[in-house]
Image (cartoon, rainbow, N blue to C red; front, side, top):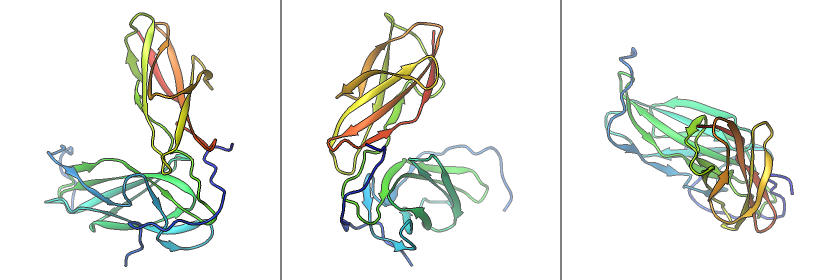
Length: 231
């Protein structure tokens, strides 16, 4: 099926995604603490918002205030096409006009009046729902290891691949692994039901890899291609 294909019928109403109503200092130094995200919740199907058209709606993103922060930097990434929307605000919420029927991730950084980084949030994911949808493809897999451009020491001719995957419908079935020394990487294993696997490699090479996630209804999502080197 088409990657990140979403058609079938109906709209499920959930909460938590509603429409609301100085000079730079030294190099930013992270301080203890983490900024808390509030809404949309992690892995939420986001259906409440201000509908602009059949293709776009306005979503309100909210987070907790962080002591000493004067501004917050919000980043929203479309997980299908990789585009990122960024904005800076002094408030603890922001409205964003987003494409409907698309998966997104978002995170926030807080800064002091001197522009020093005070705290960073985790990265959460949500779907911005649209009309005629009840079946959602998995979020693209999050590559954990090897990370992009990481140099890996080969042990016994193998390297451990690790990733994480989530799905609004909680019906992930299995994964396909693509790996190779050129792009696009070739399919090397299919129907994997774990999120980690040891795979054969050769030292002194550059490898490209990606994970395709499949759910019980046949929908798929693509992690995008990552690169690592072996030694």
